[in-house]
Length: 103
Image (cartoon, rainbow, N blue to C red; front, side, top):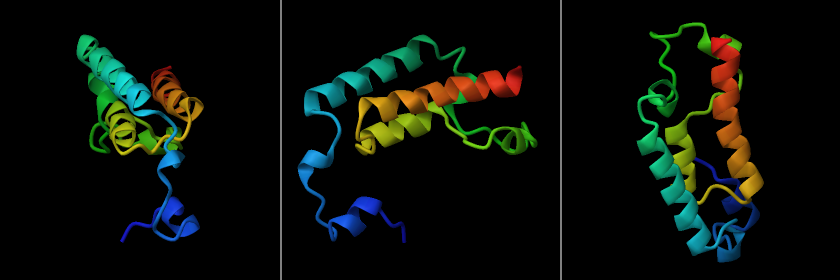
């Protein structure tokens, strides 16, 4: 069973206003990220999904905080992000990880 922090704090009844974005903002961010991923799909091949251990066995020793585009999109779809700062920090983490690992 997966435990959600917000369920613990609010006794399984988190108020709606905890979502960091309005419906319009959420849709705009989601569409923008999907469009970006589609337009740059040939470059995002290696950072779209989680890095597989059989492809890069040492990746998890070099990169302590894994992040990939599909995880950001899944979190966005589930309204995980409470602020734009958190959302953009995770997008930055994708780029930082790629730069760190690839030199």
